[in-house]
Image (cartoon, rainbow, N blue to C red; front, side, top):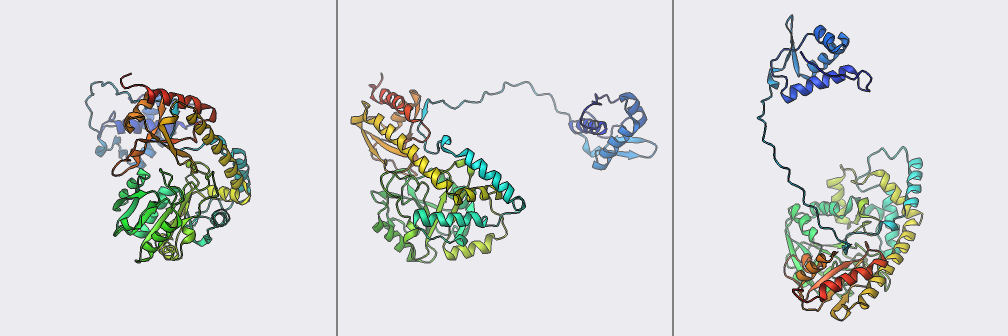
Length: 466
């Protein structure tokens, strides 16, 4: 006889509890295929429930095919649901998950200071969006993104970057990785894509995962060179602040690349303007797109650095030929960013809150940069360091001239509880001529840099074997 404990006072009806328990026993093999079930009357008396409870549970199991019924014979477990009995496996010790190393200080670059995020303003605008757009928030977003956000982005690019980007050319997507996926599908994989070397290593994985050929192209003091591009069909580059070296591409080099793109139909330059808001020693560098007279530059940016990576909102500005191709191929798809987030960000930009947030964040990060540089200058390490890239962005490069190799620098720092990143890890091929580490400072408080640099000094100035 089937014996189950049913909770008469529970929120789940008794018939559903019984149905689930019998179904569990069938799917686990406790009730074998072809086995006869108790009659409704006998089971109801045994479980002390009403007959209708058992009848309803049996009816649901019958409707879903777990059991069958035969006139004047009763109910049986479906033969085809016979479950093989598994032999009990000997107990095995569970492998313990390896915990990642913990660091007192982590100079990573893919982070922003969450204390800078304007939570109260964002919450206020979110509530306003819920009130003002309640009927529209449940609709599918258009493929390019909601009009209000595209218009806000267009005005921002014109005011801040001097870049004319009509709203109808702006496409909103769930971050740069998703937008690159769209671009590769738009441009195709018939020709190689040239990527900066060194550069953001994840880019290589993104392009290759989408079936594209990638070609690492080296840089000189002015950035990527057009004569090295060969038969590439498109080039991904960061001309206003190269990641990670910080090189700024001068106008003559930019014009050479634009001329290269114009020489053959179908060539494009993908400009990633990832951290243009954070330049400390001068006005933001003009975008390559601003010089484009041939409709060959695809402008790409996100709010990952300026707001937060978790928002997963980015955008791109397409040349007219690609815009038409996008409409032809992707007009059936909805935008990958929820309507609510798009309207909230649009309102955030329209009210001037975004510009105020950028100004405040720039001051915070400038203070952290100054604190880090001051700690390095006051450290015994100072004579051995050559600092680059302090003019912009949220990281600096430190060339270390103390006789240690790059791998040893990283390892010694880790042993002291400080995580730094070797420039070599950003190379697809080759290595830098000199041992260089990257120090991202956005995630470390200003008052902590003195201690972090002290630990680096202890790590890098200790004698070998000491």
